[in-house]
Length: 292
Ligand SMILES: Cc1ncc(C[n+]2csc(CCOP(=O)(O)OP(=O)(O)O)c2C)c(N)n1
Image (cartoon, rainbow, N blue to C red; front, side, top):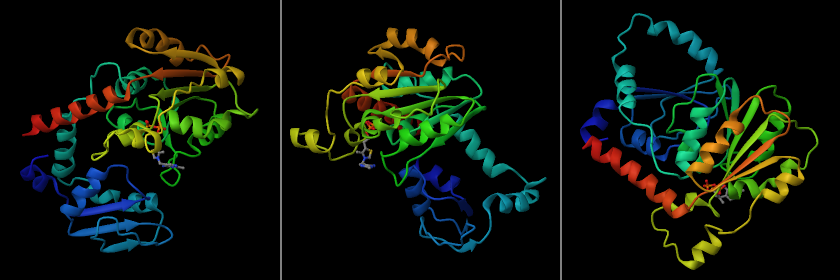
């Protein structure tokens, strides 16, 4: 946003519940444009002043609180929320060449309803938020303590008790870190894992200041050439491999079809992390230019 728009969009009152937020940009924005009042609603009454402007802690269940104040919005001017809604609508969904982002977008658009969608740490969450998710798709995220550990285990456990199809979008480091989750007899055929394999931790590639030297490739990005094929097949999954747009097009139909429910599936998509990060930067720069 331009500085003028940032001023216009700033809230007078901020009501929060829950813990962390994913977007650093939003955190920064609210810190730089502090509301006059910030109320945090938490049943345990714990104090966390995330934006440096907390004025009140309301000790009650957040949903009960929202129910109680909802009537205040009846017949009130809706100018402020509408302003945000209209502004958000002007932001185009990314329409990029074959890359992690385009693959996530393609899956989200093709999701059957109803289903559950599990998002692992961390590029998956950042990318998935750029797309509109169909209304009857339940989104589950387990970032633990912001970790890559346990996101696969949690999703598998959830799917074991779910009658819906469960889609899991996960990066390669998170998958291999927690691959033991598939060594388990209690899950069924309702699992569809989209493994985004770009041979390392892409998130670190997007951070400013990463020199991409051989040392950081070894110790930070943790580059590797492992594939999930052997393990997935060993665990009874139908394994599909995708390396480009055409293969993706072919694989998406069986991968998302509620009909093919005999075995769980793992779709391993290989992308190039240099290209992934370049396309992401271009997308954000494009938005910035549009707003200036
Ligand atoms: C247990 C744990 N170890 C290390 C980290 C640091 N960390 C955050 S994101 C990440 C890389 C994730 O890579 P990948 O799963 O391939 O997803 P990508 O970001 O490439 O999509 C790591 C190692 C962490 N969050 N948790």
